[in-house]
Length: 305
Image 1 (cartoon, rainbow, N blue to C red):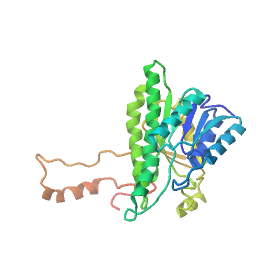
Image 2 (tube, helix red, strand yellow):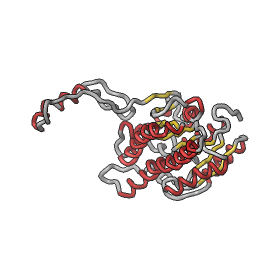
Image 3 (cartoon, rainbow, N blue to C red):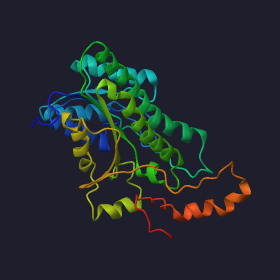
């Protein structure tokens, strides 16, 4: 096993029992990291629990000569996330990288979505990312207060659904859009402690996307393996990425894109407060001048269409 970019770094990866998380765990271990493999072991929709997936990934890493421990705490709870971060410190003596990857799907149109569909997806994706980040940040802040130098990384997982929208995923898209904003905010807050925060919007064929026809059509022409996502995650987790923070990256196959977020576009001013009736001659013109929203793949159609 080669030990390269992340030699000796302690890495926590949530949702690492399957798919992209598993690929991240194996890739970090192959580059010398000590990995805490977190996975509740639930189903695609978040139901159930099992220690099997996390244990299996740990066994793969150890068989290849790496170091890893399993964790099955529920990161959507504050206490579970706290235990996860504590286990990394107790097992390997510290924490250098947090990869927030855990997620579930409960796709529904807005008119048929239940409260539980909403709450469960928001809890795992958004609250889970914040909870793990909170406890990791407290650890790094205390180290800074104690005079230690951090060279730490957080890698969040957002989605094209959250950045560009996707019908039937109001809960998932909302969580993922919030994670992108959380990434930018956390990057600004944690820089003082020697921590960078970035996010990846991956496109890969996993158990979460296996029932989406377009994914299989794309996979016929493009590498949509979860393994293709992990090289960027490993680099972002290394000491070579310390100048990059607050960025969102789109990744699939061999393509990496730096996503460009909201920015001020066309504007109009008035010498006093607007009268609502006046806006009929203003707002449509502003919209016509503005760049169109990107489509579901992040591509911007030509103006006027």
